[in-house]
Image (tube, rainbow, N blue to C red; front, side, top):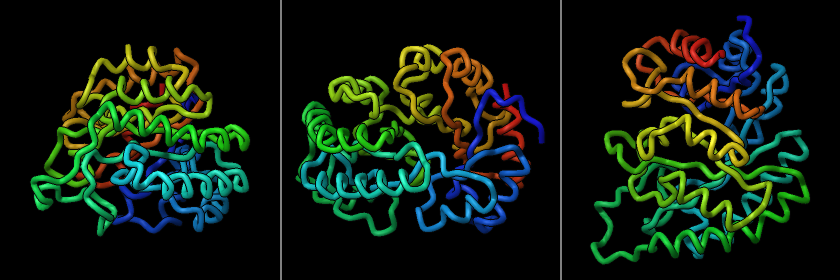
Length: 281
């Protein structure tokens, strides 16, 4: 498939793991003009390289336990340092990171959302202002290393409104608004700390996507897509104008990747092809 080349397309592996092996996903992604399969562990990066692909953004710590909780900062920093080193060795540019949940749910059993309803009613809760301060303090401990190694750290915004599926929404996540995450980024004040601007999550929480893309232009390090509502395909059944959003990214000179992170509701290859064609501006 021939693309215009203004958008660097990537595929998020977890969305398609029930349909294809990693090798199969790489072959299909490459045939559609993608340059990356992302959020896969370093152990399989050689598989991507074998297919002429990269990993646009590396995974790190989980979104449940993040920088907003001092209890988990050391763990997060250790993981980020390890991923930074692995990215340098592999020629990968960006590592994902998260604010974490406002309530301490303990280690997640499956890497997904904790069931907050089963926690004690008097469980400790981190105040949003304190959580942001903790994030600033935590990121300042690692961002200098990222600067030294020339690797980007991207805080992902996640929505807290969708409750019908563990990966469609994240009730309890603290960094659920653009302004909240941008305040942390500005206070840390490093060119190596920025946003993972997920169009699906931002649409749910804040909307006004085109204006926000322009406002955050210097801090957008990575972009994700999925249709809203439902986190499904980028089709006529959802509300986001992805072509307008992609044109805004081109207008601000964005040169990073756009990772397609929708949950298929029909034949997955057709949905992936549609997403890439929709965003090929």
